[in-house]
Length: 135
Image (cartoon, rainbow, N blue to C red):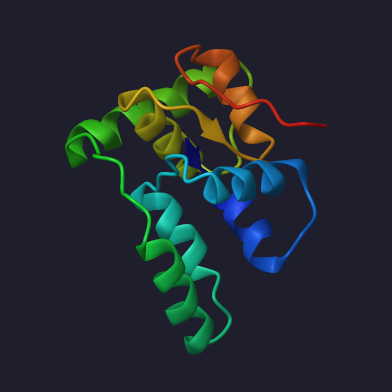
């Protein structure tokens, strides 16, 4: 599964959430847990001090990175997905969420998240597979 920054941030803060439980379970069972470049960026840019940046980079550095579509293709596809959402009357709060969705779709891998934008994006793009939370 691809794990969105919303879940990683909750995990790193020690939050209690069903999505964090799913992540912990996957890590404990050594199931495939993937990163994508925009997720790594979002998590690391939230570090409030250098020591935390290094710690988080070490933790996330152990995970495999999804193969990305070529940069131009990824940017174009994410922009088109964002535009399709707007045309359908749902504007994602973050364009990065469309880029993350493109990585999940291109690699045919489900996305674990706790971000309200992804269900909206999935309503426009049915190829985006979202893992159900335990709520």
